[in-house]
Picture 1 (cartoon, rainbow, N blue to C red):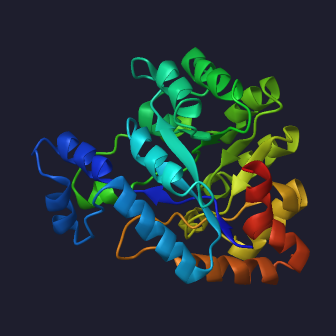
Picture 2 (cartoon, rainbow, N blue to C red):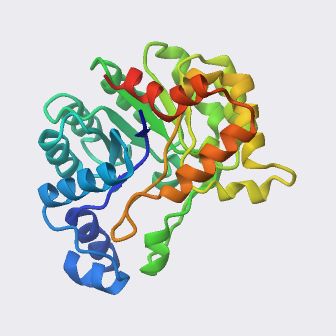
Length: 295
């Protein structure tokens, strides 16, 4: 069983939002043409394409992340169309008006499961009361979780379009999650990319909080900031602290025609094997843990 805990749903609304931020009024199709990416079409069309893509790689289920605030409806449409294949994640900007109300609507009416926080992007510290109100809203709905991006943050599509990314990386400290995780022990928290350069802090927070999970997604190029680290070493360290039940495989796949990033899967599979992780533990990391969190 292979599941992917980290895929972005680059909908037409996603591209329209980026176009509006650039101030040029381009359509989603025009923006995709500039990027040399495929036009996603309707949420239904994109959802069907993702199902075909996952089928071609033997992936049973995946997360779909609404990658800009306000795009919850696109992912909700995809999840409703293929409820056995997708788990809906959505980005929340805690500084926006009605952020708590939108969060409540997403996890109740829209049946999305995971609120995604990007403190460095939205300039809201994890100690801010606005964050706690969002976490409280998520925790009130069973079967949900909170995703918190920490460490290095780089959004490739923004670079390609020349959009500024004024991220405050000081706000992406995984240690700040521990206060929230301890306050809501029944709510899973997910830190992507092994903490994206803050592996030590991520492991410290997760060691203190049994409800903090880590996803393995992307190429993990943050390793270049830590001389001597290798991906097998990262897996081995994570296993020593978390054990096999709190690691979630992910690719960070996003746009077409690139589609699902099989190369990420193959490199991580090889790294896990080199790290000496047993087949049974790999079965949890690459599929079982996702199914347990998101039944």
